[in-house]
Image 1 (cartoon, rainbow over the protein chains, first blue to last red):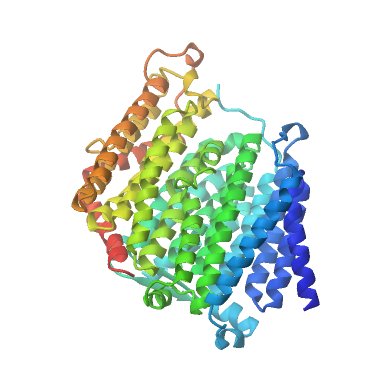
Image 2: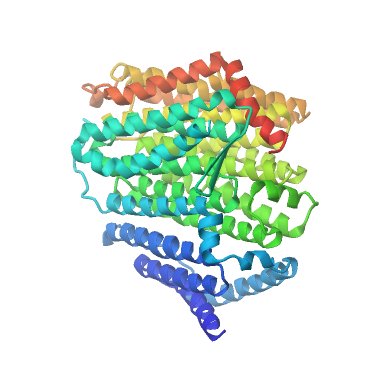
Length: 163
Length: 477
């Protein structure tokens, strides 16, 4: 329980950081941290497939793509954008937290108790017996990540075909 | 038939896997493999067309993939456009470098899209949607220029919001029903309106609406489509927004939710807003590809209107427009790519009189213009006619008048584009300009011919491909 509360607190903190920091690289790091913490929470609740997916795709693949893409932009390319003063963050956070609280309470009231059959399945049964289609998708996602990185990090061609 | 289902899914994946090794044999080997993979996937897909009215299921190694009339329609769209984009890329992609990586990502994009239309499970649909989405983020940024990378990030961030909403909706549906299978969900949701399902429906609508770029969820599209290499713009506008958005919306709201009247009204309202806003914003553009991108928002509006009418003619018109828009919009994007390839600019104001220097591009663009404006006998005429007839059948005269009016408006701004780019006095800068290379010209000639042939033989296309898909939607799945 302590681990769960700690993870949830850190998750909220990393999401807040994600919205506040002005450097895209730090924002990417905060996003990765949020995804890792969310994976731990999902593992804790027994949602193993969702956790593995979150860890590999969101924390791994998306973050690497983000960092690689951001690294390609030069400092001079980064434009200063108008932002709300930090002081507005507090009431906005309070507003969103309040809305989230009521939404989660409403949803919790609406949802039925989890089916016993779902939790009786082992990870192997669920992974190889019921979700083979998703495994194929996962493998191809990793392949997309590999080709994506190779494409983004390739030497840029200077050839021009137009006249 | 099961073999063809497996082939259409796995050929692009295997092609992507072997591409790095084949490309070591030389540039031509990579080109040949890309063309061969596209052609083989297309042939497998076309082999399924005679059985359009039936459902074929492939079960292998615990995975299940199913083709019905609706899936087949979208499979044809994906693989036809995918093949011609691969052929076009043979001469186009050279100046970007990384030919093998480009082809591999294009094949994985096609694989992801094929997967989306073949699965019958909400979470699997999400997984394959991510395969297609992540491939397209990278392909949008493929030029490694600032505008491409910026648009790719914008596309990624807004898509992440969309996938977040979709995933929450999937979780809610799973938590309350204990299943993710389309068929079982349909039975579970048949009990009547439930606030939780309505909330999930709203999330699905916003998530897939963002993927389809319907107004007001369209902010990413006008940046992403122009910045991408031309074959990817053609794939995004011609296929990706339809499969990731329109297909998913129709499969969920007609196949799982029993197309409730409130949902159809939302389709209609967003359709009219997209049709109008997209057309007006397209008229205001001076960037050729940006104009085409806004026009895609407008054309998605027609599809949403047809679906929102909910009657036979409307739905047939909408599905027919999915096919037609894929053909003429990919043609127009590939032509804009050919013009940019030769001139190095997308600014319409710098062009003029290109018809004598690029006659194939000019003539095929005219075909695309006449098709998108709904001029007979081109394909766009028939799908728009079906949608207008659907509106008249539903006694929704306002929609019918608006659809016709914006079709005329579309003709207006596309004729303006044609005049500014291809007709009039030749800009001296382009005196020594040459026609686009052979592979690029071949792809656009084939697409232009299809715009005409689908229009001339519309009856056969509607009977053989569109009506079986419409039966899946209106008869349930």
